[in-house]
Image 1 (cartoon, protein in one colour):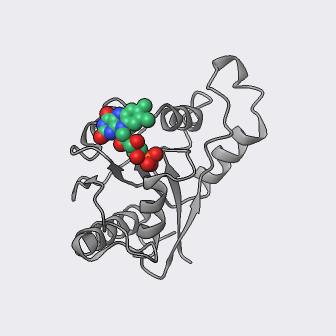
Image 2 (cartoon, protein in one colour):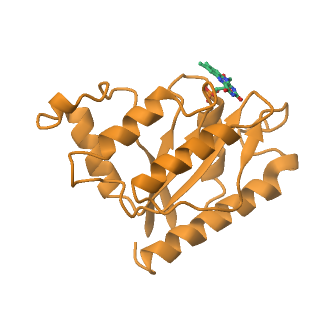
Length: 185
Ligand code: FNR
């Protein structure tokens, strides 16, 4: 596959709705895209003191971001912001100073919550963070998804009511990655 996308799911629980959303979105991607998960649940709490002695998990994170053509971030909303786990991963990838692995990686952000505001506030916070990390982030379509029965069908695909919208999101995200890759992976 030409384009290799790092997937970051901001919830680390087993039954995560955002995990299910990420898996369903991957199935809507073009054939020349491949996806791999960035594991974030084994990263230590970011501590500046550890920067010069990174654990294997920290090194793996940096390596995998560097080897990606783009990033898809699927975020939950915790108390009107992103989860601590996601912020921790963003901080780890941004360091050591002068070696920000996220820089220039085209990103799409999306999220699903059980509440009616569908991660809108978490995603706005996330855009602030991605701006300072110099991550070109897809502006439209915004996708603030509130969970409802039938969002996923029995096979784990996006159900009929949201299918066209989320296919449209994936198409725009893929075009965004191609644009920033300048035709290269
Ligand atoms: C939540 N939830 C939540 N939902 C929301 O729409 N806005 C919010 O601010 C919050 N805040 C919040 C804080 C904490 C600590 C938890 C655990 C949960 C509910 C949240 O959307 C719901 O638990 C989702 O299912 C979380 O995503 P995952 O884990 O299913 O991917």
